Length: 369
Image 1 (cartoon, rainbow, N blue to C red):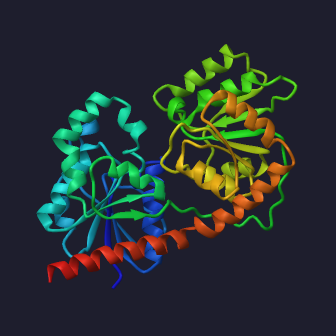
Image 2 (image 1 turned 90 degrees about the horizontal axis):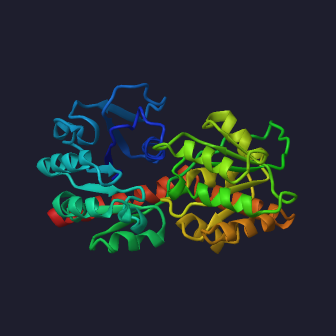
């Protein structure tokens, strides 16, 4: 029996961040795998052109971080499981109560929110929130969903001992067969300008440490995050990198794929990251990758000999850039592309995800009856 799944995320339609795009991707891919899927969000918007997914907007009340759904429980009867996205958010607390009220089990997909590094940010506030609200949310979940095997430890460290679903976010790769690529020599980074998490400061200091004669031209693209983009501009000036680094807008669609295909090296210097979808997209189009060993994706690609792997330090990243600009690094891009296309395409990960959800639903059904 294919499961009937409800995904709840307030910005599923209106957001352009990684969590929003992941919810839309999961919904479509799992529906194509045969499941019945409903996505519930906060705002009306233009739903993706996917007739196999149902979309519903429910009323919300409150402002800012205390905005939460009203009457979500009325949308839940007749389904098998509710999937909640993100962590440390009030709307999940309210949505989980609706699920319990309806007798519907829920799965929690934290999108890296329980990484030890994330838990340390505003640690005092998170400990208060954990004791008051989040612990109960986690312990009452029928399962937690993580993206890589090594992230099991993140949820075990919380004291959670229940089932864990392991399946990464997938990706859809456009067909480029008829298009030509004009290769360039620039180094590329893309992401939101959260300097600490994404390691943008490490990358800039690594570039500054290189001999100007060996330093590649670098392009950094992405949306601002809490003033991080302005701090990146200031750091470029402070380090004297004005002639070497261009900080540009976020790229989407054809512009994004063009930049990924043309770059000589894609750098993923994150100190931590739930997955790093943009790095997977770079790998998919055979861009050589430099990745940090502090991320699950970095360790995964390194274990499969598909990237230059470095420590999350400016010195190690600088040395890695020099190594990556060798002809040998081009072969890493080819291996990374093969790996990503075989293991991270939406049909592959959706099939694994749906199978694990089916097992949870069947186990619960058997236990009940």
